[in-house]
Image (cartoon, rainbow, N blue to C red; front, side, top):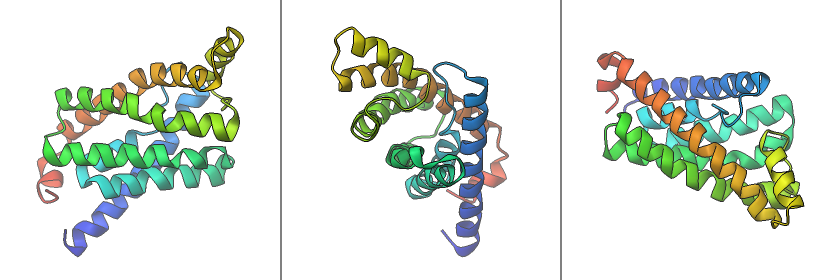
Length: 185
């Protein structure tokens, strides 16, 4: 990638970070169950520019959001970094169309809670201040172990959130003028 494309990628990564924060905040305010939309910018950046720019956008999203709204989200940067790496590697190998988006969303739906659940349980005791806490509390009170009670709502919500997020990105990429994507590849 030449200097001009590197600058373009960094600017796009910044826009991806803004997209993550804005859509994540709006989804949180509207309180849409099972939909967070806080990784769309990471997925979009990774699908266009590859795993390292996706990881950069993902990790910095959590750091910046942590500075803005409190440090609780910062440990989850690892999840967003891995999302960027996975999507970037997939997009390098295959065109990020609707079929690839669904498959990638399914993979992310499993990987993200496998990384996020240990963070939620060991750092916060399973309670992270979102919709999943209701299900978590119910599962703990019904006798489930904390890890299991934290994992089940996360994987459930991620099946919706990550597939929808990947499909939105596939639609955006499909709608992008070719002149923006041809010079990158």
